[in-house]
Length: 442
Image (cartoon, rainbow, N blue to C red):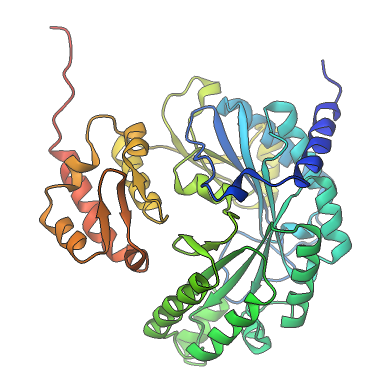
């Protein structure tokens, strides 16, 4: 019997040493897809925020007398339970999201990583990301998270315009954001990502591009561009509905996105996914696993997961959702070891639809080898090779179908949603007309 903390203590020491070495991803290769049945990523949801932002409808709560020790124990318990249920033998990455996980104590992060290291293999150079907001992440706190095992930060910067930040309900200023970014880069060089939003009400192209150029003077090697989505039930949605704010202009948002990706390309960033850009090989291992339809376990209130429960004798990949409300989730974890509220077995066609829609979000698309892991008989050529509609997309230079597989061109990535309106029905039709596998016996 290994004493508690011994194995994870060794992992943490090895992880700190690994942080001082160049990561495998720094060579510019995409991270491992992690699609093997014994490997997975781990997402951990911290459900609390200082306040609710005007645009956000995520599963988050304003803390009122939260007992972090009890929440920590439940996160650890659910981590252990789901790792055993999944039969996962190797965790490729851990992502602490929310909510605002930088409000959690570093001890909570360390406790979850300790549980992972005790239950399965967590390589010393595994990517461990923490989402951080500038106002909850002073340098000393970021350093403490690094000591707890975090080796990558994702900073919710969102804007470098104070008026826009107020509109979004953010608690930080542009100055706060740049200060936190500088501290993060000092502590986690080459391992800091920032988010920048576009398509806000009344936002104009040129001022937004000036923000992007300014950010390039301060940012690290990973940047995400996200278009605002007005979500029903949010303050921003209500203000637009009531006419107190103008509705975002989709044409201006499209222009911002197109101009922004050209600016980033000229600055040496690779657009490796629709919204994500990296240079010097700083791709996100964790998100790459999502886009390659690898397994991932969702821990915490409202977390989502996708895995085969092999440890419980299962053979079918399931979509899982944990109970949303933190107090109810904690009661269920205390009673049952986990707070899984919903389990949905995924059919073969559903999985292929995910492989297609998620894979085409990346610049490498869906390779023939990757497709065959999910569908060994119906090839990409069988599905798309003879389609008149797909040939039209190929001739327009939006798609490529060749010996490597199916992928979007640089121009096609910008209009992926419209391409999927053609590709998904084509997949469904090919699936309906496929030739059944020969059945032996009689």
